[in-house]
Amino acid sequence: MGEKYNVQIEDLTPEFRELAEDIGLELALDIVDKRGGEQLYIPSVKTVQKAARDRLIRSEHDSGVGYKELARKHNLSVISIRKITQ
Image (cartoon, rainbow, N blue to C red):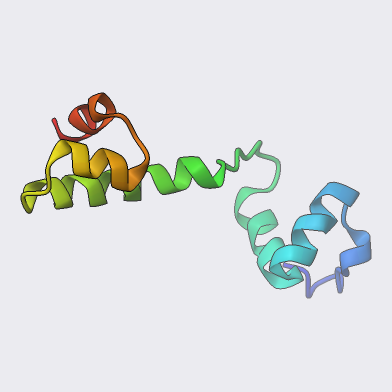
């Protein structure tokens, strides 16, 4: 995408330039090519990790680890562990 006009990082808007500096110009331009003009929500780390954490908790519970131990290990309440493992 950027090759046609030799797009450089300085050509980007300040907000998008910051992302391009983080991930690299090539990947940033790939996002522009695929998702340009769209609003894009980027979830927090906590949100992204929650599904993986819950999967781990279910796996540990299925292996016989009790609610209280899981709650302590994952810094959650027993009620939260019960909801995750239902």
